[in-house]
Length: 171
Image 1 (cartoon, rainbow, N blue to C red):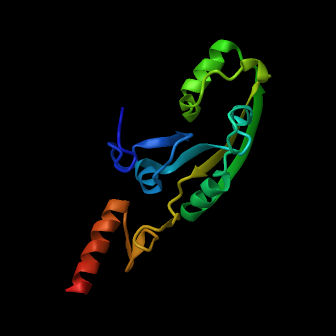
Image 2 (image 1 turned 180 degrees about the horizontal axis):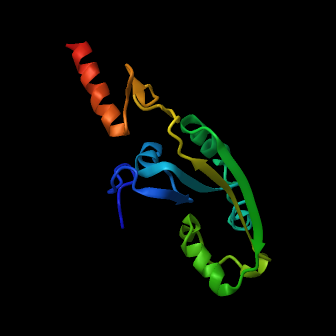
Image 3 (image 1 turned 90 degrees about the vertical axis):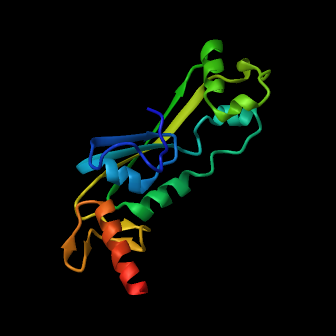
């Protein structure tokens, strides 16, 4: 399925797990499609990710590691973080495959594979469980699933009620 991450084409609470590997995520969409007690797993690079290729091409280390974690902390609590790092040997074929699946494919391809003994894959794996008590920071200031003593089942229900209240207050 090809879809816009801002508007996933799935019903609310459709999935027991959402897995995001090396791509941006839209937290309110993750929460919308995730079932109660569902798990969100996010894999993102550490500064050591593909360090040999970055060095070979004269590029900086991956610098967004802390940004990813800070962004997760803005929207979620009870985040479990595990770092997995492993160095893999490279053959000519998997070197070419690796280059073509990264943004590095736009760089000069004549760099020597012999300069690399292997490639480091280093990822932070964040595991987050959706709980009924979660608050959704940043969505209409803050969202706690309770407004004026009413419990809302979904973000959409809350959004509609919040908009109605805000429209009445403005008018």
